[in-house]
Amino acid sequence: MGKAQGLFISLEGIDGSGKSTQARRLAEALRADGRDPVLTREPGGAPGAEDIRRLLVEGDPDRWSPETEILLFTAARRDHLERTIRPALARGQDVITDRFADSTRVYQGATRGDLRGLVDQIHDDAIGVEPDLTLILDMDPDVALARGLARQSGEDRFEDFGLPFQQKLRAGFQALAEEYADRCVLIDANADPDSVATRIVDIVRARLS
Ligand code: TYD
Image: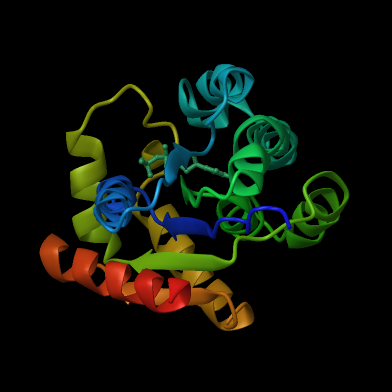
């Protein structure tokens, strides 16, 4: 018998919602449990996908149309899936990814016109998988935007769309949590980071046991 597949977990949320910190803390908690998770991110998570990332997160907000973005994010995701996610799951490792296809559904599909049909079509043809569990960090965009911009990472292209954009994103993620209620859990991320981390680890441990 082959080794059991690992659990595929994604973290989602608006810019500055604390996903990256929470993804890292979840990986640490699973390691402490004796598991061997792979912590990864999108756009990126494989060398080619990281090259595509730079095209997407740097530069002018109007650099790409939403349609072109869908294709670029999906190209990066395909590389991430082939090179990092599938091999890790097949080895029995859990995968924790900071963003996956739900980000495209919301950022490209539901903010600058209704492109959800195109997003779904391309996703079905080129990706075709969903995480086993998606944790959506729900946070007030005022708080999150202040945190995101404060980082001044040079990767602020989406933050530069401004507050109304972030509000649309929040509503989009909330709607997605209802649409995919079987795999998505909406987490109140306005709470302090320690209690958010505890909540997330409890949910994941319950799924693993
Ligand atoms: P990320 O590195 O998660 O940024 P942050 O840590 O600030 O949340 O993602 C980079 C940006 O790319 C982010 O603004 C969200 C955006 N994005 C999309 O628009 N579509 C996508 O499919 C993905 C994966 C990310």
